[in-house]
Image (tube, rainbow, N blue to C red):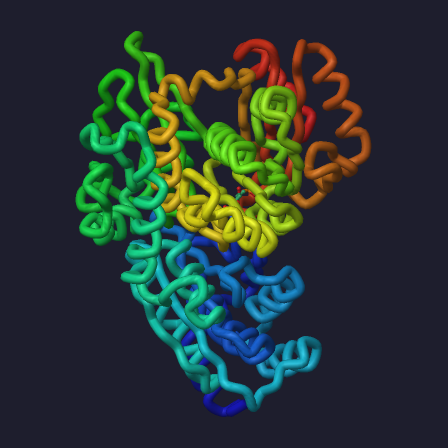
Length: 523
Ligand code: 16G
Ligand code: ZN
């Protein structure tokens, strides 16, 4: 390690005094002006992680659905997964080290993680469309370079695209070509394979209005247009040319406010969807003829995909193990439908993609979605092998469906999820209204409150029960008992300085009242 160069470069990316940040659920997130030193240091860490694993590591500069003024950074592990938890701690240590301790902290990490400093380091870098992202990604490059690492700057990409290229690179092309062209080709080929057996194909085009949150999704969808088959015609709204990123639009806005985004005109029963700011989440929605808005969230997306896969497995006589992975936020009605009507096992894990992904990998087919629209289907090697064996016998091209290549095997991907959903709706001849009618959501309310220290709340049972502060869970239990068909939980956010409260009850009024009462108990 060239400590002189490190000192010199680090001085160009100074850490503001007294600032401490934590590598949270999805990396570091903060106001963009506080992040320059974090980016430089994540460049350093990515180079070390690359040496430790002997693989290419990804660094994505984005703050997803958060306001345009914010930014963030997360590292992508060799197979396109989220950074391993053991390294999240190193990331926090490195980001918070004072200038004079930087060298010592780096040396300690190298020792603890057995980093062979003689090895080559390779880092792929991507960024979203925030005005601050370009300069911040340059700081990442400085960090990688000062440790003698090689880098490839992919520039503007969606988060899932960066995960994709990292995975391709480290699996020597088995997952696909590590280029955006490779990504578009892979997705469109898989989509066409799926849709060509559709009874509805050839009957004209499928129109879909997409709110791109004024973000990167618009750019990348336009780039993908020439690769898309003529069957699907996407209409891009909120492309970022007029309004600010995520402002009154995008998947998070639509999910939280349960209303349509600004900038998208909806006609009755028209199928619409929203991506979030880095295009790893998607939710669908429509308004009915009476003008009522209907949200189709991650839970209903998971249900649609599960129905399709379950029917397919039955048709080809496969007995692969399939499960749906949810979090505490999943609407109780969706869990009941999946378990009782569909007879699919459901598992609940902590919030955050890494937890869902990890659990999903225990099954041959793991359908995982957060209610907020982040999710995908993961398939095991066993599943791929059996699918290939039965391929010849199947009417439908099972080889193309299992391992379900339209679904990202790394993280949730709004573009690939959208293609899968469109294909399944077409194959099953379902309207958006029929899809929505699978089950009715229990009335629910999500609130957030600011407290002095959100970390005093500790949870257990996949965040469904609070263990500290003492007495809080007892208070919640007593409140929940007051209402019919109710449940509620609190958890500290992993991305904002707030505590989140979720409540369900028999009526919207009661769900609102329960959430409010629980929020008072949190203070
Ligand atoms: C991050 C997570 C998302 C989770 C959300 C919860 C990833 C890639 N993203 O955006 O999955 O739902 O955080 O935020 O893991 P919260 O902790 O603030 O509620
Ligand atoms: Zn996102």
